Image 1 (cartoon, rainbow, N blue to C red):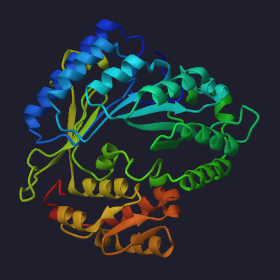
Image 2 (image 1 turned 90 degrees about the horizontal axis):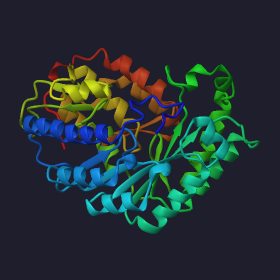
Image 3 (image 1 turned 180 degrees about the horizontal axis):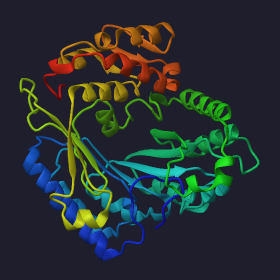
Image 4 (image 1 turned 60 degrees about the vertical axis):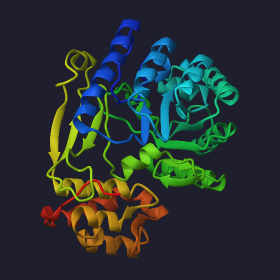
Length: 391
């Protein structure tokens, strides 16, 4: 296993079987601690990711999923991430036997030169082999990840390249596709290469490529339901939707985050605080003390309200006015009246009695829209904050 040159997510490379087994055991131990504290009634969605789960030896994975399923019965959507180079028939058989019904596979590109440039462990042959395995042995839901905004190192324009990648990805008929624009994060191998940074397309070229990709996907029946996510009807990621809708969530494992309230388990309960928990980005620290290694902070009402704007306006469904008002005691329109008026008049937002949601153009200018809304919302007295979560 190796880390891709652009990746900023926490991960460890070179772990042997013993470390993997201990990590899986500690995941269950840490989950049990959280379940004792939070006492959740259900787990609507489960997502196993944050690395490359398909690298786990299948016997260890089988044992882990057996133990996990005793604790999270009844999930509607159960997703696991996989990478092409480590996908196997045995992996697919094991996860199917334990109720996993959705795979998210990181492809990034079908271009051999770009896969090498990105530092991906899988070349084109491994990607094609994984596609064939999925077509033959996988009966559940499927999502593929692709990257836009890559350099033109294969003799074709970025616009043509991304359309060819999308066409290739759609050949196997996935219900979902995530399309992310490459971002260069500080501290990654890519950030340290001046030559590679200079090869990236400028903003206008990248924007043209992105617009072509969005238009093509929508013509193929893939609705843009979030800034970077496209799905056929009924194939949206329920796990991510819950996150964007600002529902409570629990993350377990090194680098994982959680947001929850200890007293917000009924509509009529008063919520004194919303807690953001962060697990350490250090495997050894986490393994040695999983019960106390995390840090916690209490989110203020204003911080939580701003996150509702940030998350909700990423999606085509936007922010529910009724739900926001139930949580914070005022309408989101009243929280940022002038900013919402400005961006609605500019054609970037649509506002009615049900919701505030971005237009297609608003999704492209979301950072500007949110900065303006944040400036307005910062003037609000959020002390009326009452209950979270709400249906």
